[in-house]
Image 1 (cartoon, rainbow, N blue to C red):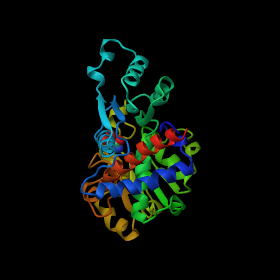
Image 2: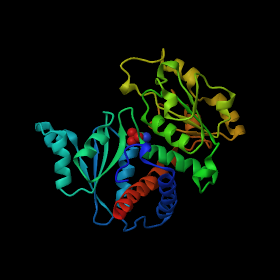
Image 3: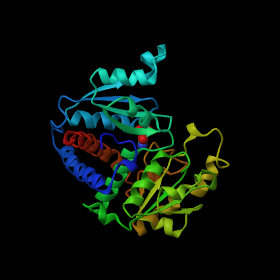
Length: 312
Ligand code: CP
């Protein structure tokens, strides 16, 4: 348990331990001085080859609140521009004294590949369409806080519907794996063009092409972003049509409120496409909570990886 690259790296014990630590870290974040000395003297390198707001800033804040030092690797001004290979870059960062590498890359399995060339902790902050494990853990933690659950077992049977572009979503893949592992009832709702082949191999899920009454009555609805930057072409006729068929709009707000259904979204959102502002910023939205919890959960992940390696 040196690295967090995939939800597959985690057994139920690891998940429970990270969630339990997240509750403690969330308490730290409520204090006037949000700082603990846990990772003092450790160096965390943030290596983002793709754009990010939430993940990058929350990992940096998490590191600072744990008293670690942070350093940002900027690909566009690095020696990679002079032809240095990725493997030599990773070896260089290791030799410079980093203890953790938090990495986002557009290529699937990139974090897995680089983990072969270093013994520092690798944390996957999103690899292409593959996985985003820290996002799935913060999604789970947000659900648990909302349900008042302290133990992951309490979420067994909880209904989650994930609506949107599953094919291009690393969040969906990590969420499906994590929620299924915990015995949650996962339904995906997606245009048939964005349902990946063999999706059912990721977990025990139901697949639907349209939103129905059961979806509206889920405990949680996770909306996904239409990933325009990954689309060579549209996978649905237009954004307007997507919004009309798979979007969550004003007309549904009262019904969702009545059913006690919460709306979640990993962000960034396409407001007006997958979700309307009246829903995204409403009392049934947990979207800001997800962002806030991201800091606590990432503190927990960094601390957990460090503590597990100390045991080895
Ligand atoms: N959810 C998420 O990964 O957001 P960012 O791209 O802003 O990091």
